[in-house]
Amino acid sequence: MRPEEGTLISRAQAMAALLELLTDQPVVVCNGFPSREAQKIADRPTHFYMIGSMGNASAIALGVALAKPNKQVITFDGDGNVLMGMGTLATVGALKPKNFIHVVFDNEVYGTTGNQPTISNVVPLEKVAKAAGYVNTVRVLDRDDLIYEFKDLLKKDGPSMLLIKVNEFQEEAERILLDPPDITKRFMRAIE
Amino acid sequence: MIESDVFVQSLQDLGVNFFTGVPDSILGGIIAELMDRRLYTPAVREDEAVGMAAGAYMAGKMPAVLMQNSGLGTSLNALISLNVIYRQPCILIVSWRGQGGKDAPEHLVMGEVMPQFLDTMKIPHRTLTEKTAGDDFTWVAETFRKQQIPVALFITKGVVKGLHP
Image 1 (spheres, each protein chain N blue to C red):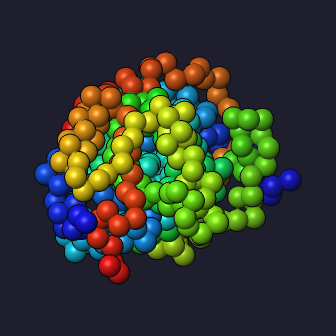
Image 2 (cartoon, rainbow over the protein chains, first blue to last red; image 1 turned 180 degrees about the vertical axis):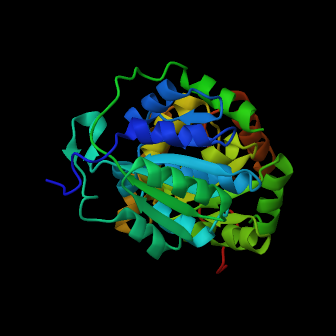
């Protein structure tokens, strides 16, 4: 059993706190429940919801960040996703986009498929990001810290990673409502 | 043989303004030219390159992804469950290793099945030749704009000048 179990907030609680601090920044949300929860908490045209291509959220966000260097670009990612696309930590660390904030909701499981364990309980992903060249990396365990740290990262040059330890709770959240081509069009218009 | 700078200029003339990918020897001259022009963002895996290109597209760029054909295998899921279903086009510049069965063993299977492989995924493709280059580039740009999905241009050995002629 994890030492902090029972004391952690849920991903949805963490996400809600972050979304309150965001306005019109592009947010690329990884596939599975993170996208569904973001849609439920605050559906904004600046959100790009992924419904497939697991592991690719950070690469998509990196493409947006490189093409729009004057916009702060956020990605909401999960531990399973980061592990799958771990090479992208290296690409981000090497390219060092200042406008890139990588938020990782780390619940140590593949939640969408039935809570099979990942290996993030023994692989500290924010340390991997730091070693790869991210400028700022922070691990937080509770809501107050996460608000404080996220506000701070919004003011700093990145690339930054905010890793939030969350519990395994999943919100009741329906599937993504828009058709994928409409998500693309809406996102493109919103970040123009 | 097409010079690398002519190849890159042709893509730029079509409006392509974001280049990423993973190298191959056949593409060596093109990538060197892109790096000279400070246009190339290197990726560590082909599916990552496809993801970056998708992000760049949504941010207003016209992206191209360079890769060896083995990278099509690595990119398969991103190409179909990102680009195709979300209607996010990109230009795939794919070196055709293993064409005609003359290459190292690891290239032979993909080299033989590549066109059918892309047909199965419903990704349009064409093979660049020196004679038809003008038409080939125009076709790529039109397909990109009309179909809004990935479109592949195959580069066979010796058609574009490499690093070691």
